[in-house]
Image (cartoon, rainbow, N blue to C red):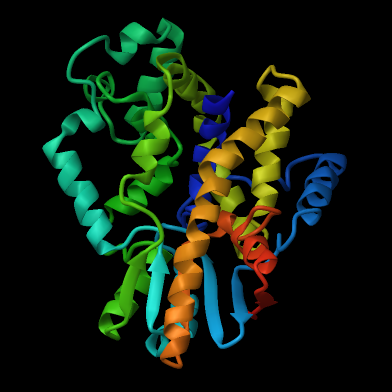
Length: 338
């Protein structure tokens, strides 16, 4: 069950959304019958802090300004970067999921150990998958610029991650003038302003998450990724619209509803998988981030300054989201206009 919901979450790319103008498709939520749209809206409204991307937390003299991000280039980033540039310039630290040092360590590790991404021995994906699933996988990866001969040796989690990226995203990433996602642009601001950068988690967090899958879960991860891969551009537009509306949790609930209808599982099974994936991919990480966030804010307060944090938008809302966790520790939460 864990692998199935990880696949669904990959479709969200942790709110890593593309530019809507470059991804052509339909909004899958808008296309739903009214009753199903109402169910999504009702479930989203039940989540604390479900609407909003820009927040401030205060506790005594300590202050954390938070922005929920997506990780691909988008013309809409310009206004957000302009608004946050003076805030970052005055901050003591910008906290992000993975900073330049962590990115460099990840890159070096992958270059030194290609076995992290590809299987150097043992059965290939065509041997592990059914002929039908391999055909669908190879065609989907070909559409994303990955030849079948390369795909055949990919680690399942890596193949599923690429499946979660719409072809329009892949084209966008290949453009030479792409400025990078909001996280990257805000890190560039911090470096220009000589503001310290600090990572919220170790560089190998994602590898640790996927390293815990069993061989069967690995294959299930691909199998459950395939149906949404065929509609990846529509997913991209749906997510972009939700981000523009500052209501990213609606996409999480849409994925749940889509699983009710198309996964062949019972609602109870889907709900169980949703809870497990949320715990592994978001809740545990959120809890681990609270100490770095609050420690950095307290240190900055001693110098009469504040900190800024930029991380995936799906980490903000919910009972176990960063905002609610901070609130439980006595921080006052305020939504800021964006």
